[in-house]
Length: 381
Image 1: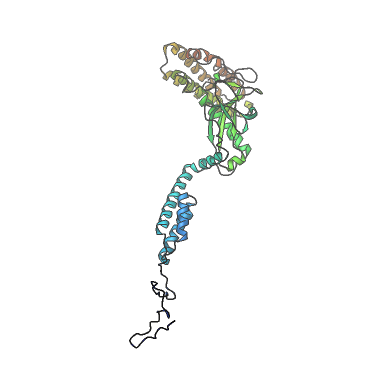
Image 2: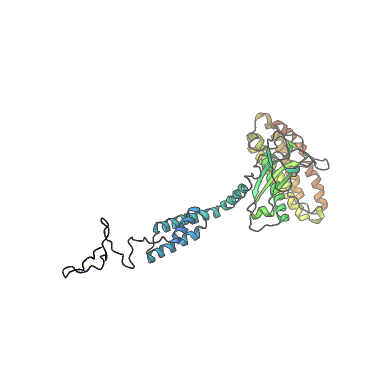
């Protein structure tokens, strides 16, 4: 083996030249200087920008996503990081999410949204039947808490028929007593809007209601469902009880609306059972009845009745004028004795049987509803 000659005076030693020759065909190399990389390392992506985009895309905690997006933009400019597009996109999507959530809260849609989520979590269970639908209830119970109701055709036997529904308000659960009181008052008030002809509702049918539970209230349930059901134990209904403007003709509706005015006045009687206990209150009530009779007669005369019922309606309107005069005397009675003297006569002038002729001519029910004692209830519709 020969020893390579040392560099001559015209060949300065190259510090990067290997001290020994490389095999033939293999070039020499230069080692990289310390602290230098052969590749350009890219700047890191800002983590807050990524988080902002995720929250914005999912519309989850949009307020947090918007804040993270704005903070990320500041960090990117200061640190020279990447992710400007991600931060801007996240901030924009989060802002849109905030607007959508605000609209849901204002319109009440948020409650409906979470109710839908809750129903979906329970396998898509449906809510209470809608107005005009009939159903069977677990165990046949129609009062108290709403349960799983099976919708069935109204033509067949069923436990109940929905005639109205409404939503309660408030944040905290008001308690069973308050909910029941509100449901009872509101459902009875909505009854006549669905069954305008009270004479067509069987005597063994009563008003019930399904109310939200405390757990349901916490989950967003505020709905009260008003239903018709049988008062007989184990009793069932057959056929729909609906008789409103979707079922009745224009003449029937005109008569029932006029008669409803008197029914509202009669139902506003004082709570005091004896006239002597509240004579002023009973006199004011008699005044309301007298005014209602005048309004009922006016409404009957204002309608263009068909020839087959015109004479009967005219006769009824004349009877209402006579009754109004007597009820006016009741309202002006100076003492309880005078009140009763006119009251007996006035009450006889509005007995339900006086409306049978007109009802028959109009094709409405002709049998007055009976009270618990078997007597006519006195309602005129």
